[in-house]
Image 1 (cartoon, one colour):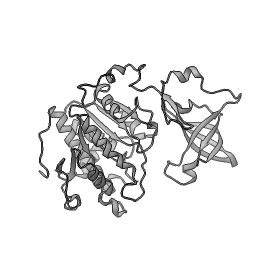
Image 2: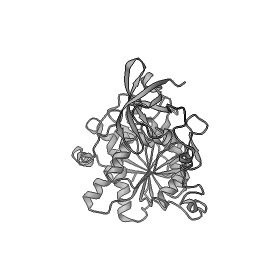
Image 3: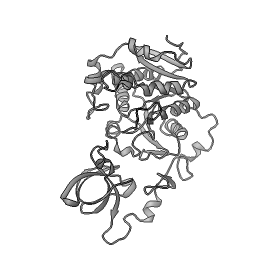
Image 4: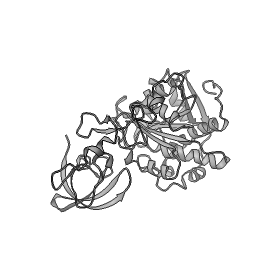
Length: 379
């Protein structure tokens, strides 16, 4: 069930290519903030009447305290987006068969400049390109900033990093402040959305073509696949959105990539099921037993004990603990705070350290530009 409200836009608070933040006057003299995605509804001006989806705020859920613009009301009753404008966006529908279905141009369709890449996939593999997979959106800046830190420290050439946003969290990429900041700094070479997520620089139909687009369209040296902001969990063994990591790991392997899983680790989470290695990560490892992957783990007795019997398909690499001073160097140039569930590195360093450990491995492979030697379990 959706809760709707009418409002009038009184001020444009923030104006960007992919998102507008608005101040809206709602009934009963209430003033509120709302987000508008121009890709869905077009660009809004002050004074316009809008229809707002207020459901998450009304239910006190984690939408950041903002409503979302669902429709614009023209004063003369005419459409606010004409058909000629709509036709320029492509022919593949996202959010299909919902009131918010909209057309995008994907790289696979005939009108795309990259159509030919996907007509013949014979011999097209990721060629052991590192594919870094994580459950939480805050792992994205933690990993990318760690790579840039290692690159500055060694003086090497910066790798091309492509971010593929999965469907496990927010569907509009425009919601992510992390992505906007990383792109403005030049730390991401490209962004991709697939399935029903939308708003990437490149749109794809599915995960397989998204990974190939990262490699052959964006020429990525490293591919990061993670959800956008927000995720769903129910406290049950399988009822969490992070289970998508199982199929992402499998797909990355089948396409010839090097799947690197960032474990979700915490020593500050108050929920027992997330203390140490989260039960989410343990479950993903169990269901991905037959998929070769690399797991980077801090050499910590409690964490090692949690792993118990591991699959022979999984390569485990131990790391010495990250120093807090070094982590401060990692994030010191980033304009916004990085936190997970409201906790910064000062409170829960080990969470961010595991993104850094994954970056260490990816950087070593990139710097050497050669296939990694096979490693025995627990070496």
